Structure formats: structure tokens, C-alpha cells
Length: 383
Image 1: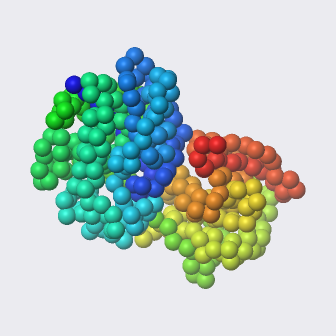
Image 2 (image 1 turned 180 degrees about the vertical axis):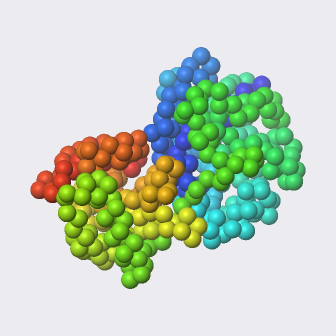
Image 3 (image 1 turned 45 degrees about the vertical axis):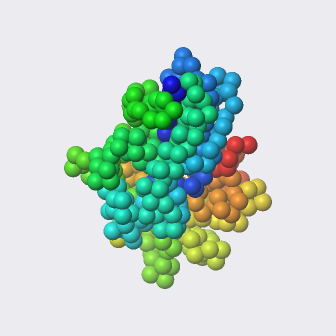
């Protein structure tokens, strides 16, 4: 009898930035590494003979919790990948809900009629995952195997294991990041022992515990952003007022606000790309801005964020991190492996926010009217 521990990857960028990541190769977050440490402790005294993972970075990184402490080799199988979302890869959930409402309703109901545009259906992803699990189990008769996989594929292959009809799919629970499911395989049949157990995670480092999209208790939905280039002719005042409000809140009224300097910078960044000033949207309402400079620090492989802004009425809702996700999505395809921005050392709120999401101080801006720390976050794969 083969024992299989089927484990979902730790919190990754898609979970945090609220973006659709199937085959998109996203990174583990700072909180995800804390989850991996907790998972390592869970498996400390559990004998494991082999470790397998999908060939995506987030599963291979999570698998370190088991194969490294036990001195095992990591095997990969692309059959364990997440559902292929194809044309929807790296789309924000906000954009999907806003522009593809009917398709998202089908997806959320786990409808067998749903298919990712140009990609897979739920049934196809589940069947692929089940074939991979069986293939791996047959390689390890009478052994214990840890297999690192993805949420939707785990959910769908467990529907197959339990013999559920498509009409029953919506009743399947969603698993927490690093949740563990245990199966046995007798050479023919896969049988569940337990499912979706994340008891190794303290509540403060769970992912789904902070989100509401999966609940059925009537609580408010999560706020998922979508983005559009600024309409400069119509929204220049919106940009300037945001800059003024942020400047005054940070530096006070005694240091003059030089609006024309900021407008000049914005025009220059818009010449580089229409996304040089990006408006973050909640449904039809602008809620913030993220400004991107493609030239500054280009030779150092970094993308520069001159301005990251959440309007006052949308603060205290953990939405700013989604703006960082938009910057990652824009700069990573350009080959940048770092994000940089500047922050006043006395702006405690912003400093805390950026540190929470992986930025560290690498220097101080010279010849500036106000003191500014230069902060950096690595967004590449393992060095």
C-alpha cells in the first residue's frame, strides 16, 4: 500500500496580489515562507521515501519543507501543474469579475460547462492531476510519497477520487495554502484518509483566513482591483490632487508642493508607456494610482515606482499590496528582477507597509528636497 501526502503550495503571488495564476510561474510570498517553515515542522517526524512536485516555482519551493530536511531528491511532473488558464493568465480577479462576469460565475460554481479561454476545463485539469498521482504512486509501491500540487487540481482530482458527479463539485471545500490531504493507493484504487488539513498553520499566517471569497456565510466580498491607463486629458486633476494629498500627509504644509514637477514626471512616464500612470479601479470607481518609470534603474535590472497611492476612503483594507502586484506584472516581462521606490524615513505607515511586503532599505536619495530612503524588493527567481 502506497501512502501519498498531497500538499498544496504555500501562499504565492497570485494569492496575495489577487491575480489568476495557473501556469504563470509566480513566487512564494514572505508569508508563504512562514507557512513552509510550519509545514517543515509538521513533517519533521513523518517518514517520507520520495518527494514530487509540479514543475512550477511555487510548488518546487514549497517542497523544500520536506525534501531538503530529509536529504531527498526533488522529482517534478508537469502533470501536477495548476489548471491552465491560458488567455486569463495573470489577469486580476477584479478584471475577470468586471469584464467576464458570466464566465466567472460559472467558474465560481465549479460548473462543468466552464473552460478557461484557450485553456482547460475543470474536468480536464482534474483528470490530468489524477493521472499524475497514479503515475507517481505506481513508481513507489509500498512507500510514502509527498506530492506538491495546486488548489484547483487538488480539488478536482479529489472529486474523481470520491466519485462525485459534476453537480456535486460546488460542495467541495477549498484548501488552505500548504494544506495536507492523505491518500492510499493499492495498485488500483485511490482512497482518501483525510483532506485539506492545515492544522500546522497558526491563524495569523493562514491565507484563506484573511479572505472571504470562499465563504458561504453572506459576508462581504473581497475587494479585487482592475487597472487601466490614466485618461490624462480628463484625469490630470485627479492625479495632481492625489500627489498633493500624499505630499502634505507625509511632509506637512511647510515644505512647498511643486505640482508642475510631478506633472512633468508623469508626462515623461506616459511617453514611455500608456501604463506609466495606471489607475486602480474598484468596479467603476477609481481608488488609487501606481506610477511606473521604465528607464530609471533599468541598467540595474530594477523597475521604479515613483508613486503608489490609495485614496483615503479605501485605506485600512490591505489593498495597497495589489498595486505592488500590478507593478510586478508590468516589470517582470521587461526582465526586471527588482522593484525600487523611495519613501520618507518618517513616513512610518508607508515604511511598515513596504517592509511587510519584502522591501528593504538599500540607500538614501541624494540631493533631494526631503529625506528619502531607497527601498528595494527582489522579484526574480532564486539567485
